Image (cartoon, rainbow, N blue to C red):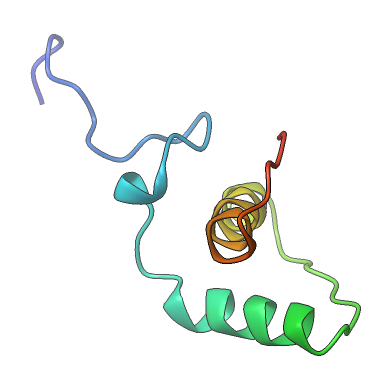
Length: 71
């Protein structure tokens, strides 16, 4: 990779749903648990994408329920 090329996979922050991929099952579980008022815990080793998943979930939830969510 050349120095001036941009990594297409951001690793420092959540940008938008357009850059989020491959966590469909986890997102469905979070949405289902939210719909059923179930508490959910996420735990994993570092740098796996837990924060990005939560931010993506909140973005989707805001779209579904027409909410304003500050992250």
